[in-house]
Length: 334
Ligand SMILES: [Zn+2]
Image (cartoon, rainbow, N blue to C red; front, side):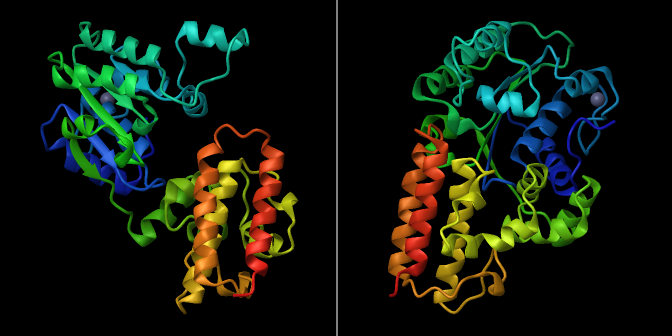
């Protein structure tokens, strides 16, 4: 049984990183290339009892402990929403607070969790292979949390290693970046992504269409396929926006809707420049008269909306506002 998604491009990078020494890695690059998977592969290999050049063996007690999310020498630091999504248990205290409805799961990495991790890194390891701290997405640390980590990164207790993964390394404290060895995520080869998605149970036709909509990023495709976004839905998106049909976005979170609209905007800009679209087929795009300036302004508004998308006042209203803005933009002449 494998403890990580054994995608070939992830394994290649695991092998590459394992040949280098370093107690702290920063994995960076665009989303959807498997940063979390690589971070977990690396941490698993560090803690594995019989690691190979390719990484963790997947069979030993350490690998099993990671597979069931109970490894005593691995601390995982993520926003609580992300931990729940990826199946990592919260601390007892945090879980009780959420169960008792005292607060909602956090979308940032909490300073309490960081304090636990700092304490963890000072303890003796339980299994004799050292310890690992995984931070993802690292840009979800606020300044207080980041500073707490920084101290540990500057004076690491002997046997602890860190792997931070981020889709936005420019948002990290420069002092954090400078304490880590940086690795930029590599893209899979064209056929690898398809083969891998097939192995994850995504049908060929769906994989092909979604790879296009996800700009070739396979783990984004997997998440899209799992959330039920079909190729037909994607193909119909531009025209639904032209018609102002907000119901088309109903199954999306505001953040997902903004991402989809940014891709639409991106492709319309490419069309204006006479280039091939990247995320949609030409036939799926409306013949919009909107100029590059109008489209660029729309893109900027979408970026602004993305900032508040995490805490929308009302998700339904936000989707309606996004649709209305999209429709107006697409209907602008010049
Ligand atoms: Zn193992």
